[in-house]
Length: 102
Image 1 (cartoon, helix red, strand yellow):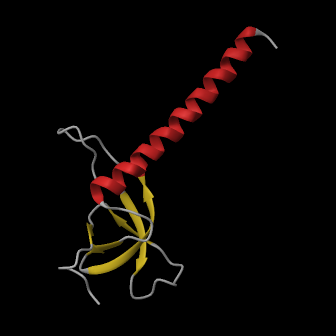
Image 2: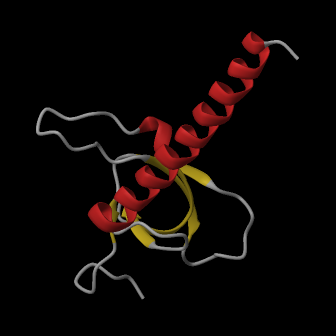
């Protein structure tokens, strides 16, 4: 194996590791700043949904140095066993005790 190929492999491993670390950092940001966890309950258009996935690639840098809310996918809270997920976009709020619909 020549030197160039070896350097390429090392750099690719470092890039993949950095991408994984960035993904995890963005998920941590969503958890601690927005309160998003897997199966968190959010409100969108007056309906409650259970979060199924978070698209951290949709987060954008804001002027204040933070990130925008990510686009999420969820299932209706009244039918959580249904496999149909819907895109909720980034226009959602975390469900709180004051806006719970039971």
